[in-house]
Length: 161
Image (cartoon, one colour):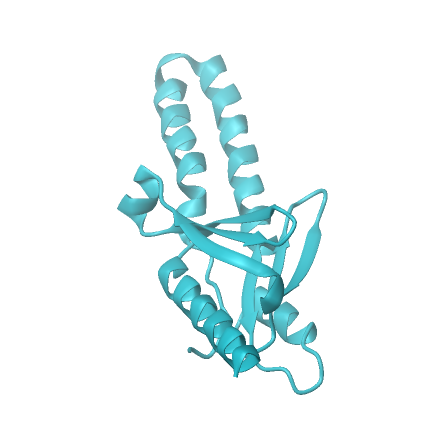
């Protein structure tokens, strides 16, 4: 288990803790979240040199894409405490979910080609009642999933004993 890094999601997760609860891991959102915006920016710069009007339009699209990525990075949160998983996602429709370990069925990882190149993954958490929550661009997804699996195993073993 690691000590969470300082940042907006850590402080928000710490704010959500109940009495006697400890924050064990705070997932880090990878800077790969910006790759699409920078790809569009590169295209815009090329088009500014050849087809100016289209380049300006694509430059505007790039700014919007980078702005959405920044907002998403700011609001995404995936944290693990010794009692539950805290999840926050969305921009316009911001959702905060607190899922206790006995309600978590599985934690999976999905990696795209860019995710493998840049080093991020999407953490998929399946809860009871067929609820699936996907948190994209998680830098330390493997470690987060391993810690979550350990906590679920400990909780299950303690109930069985």
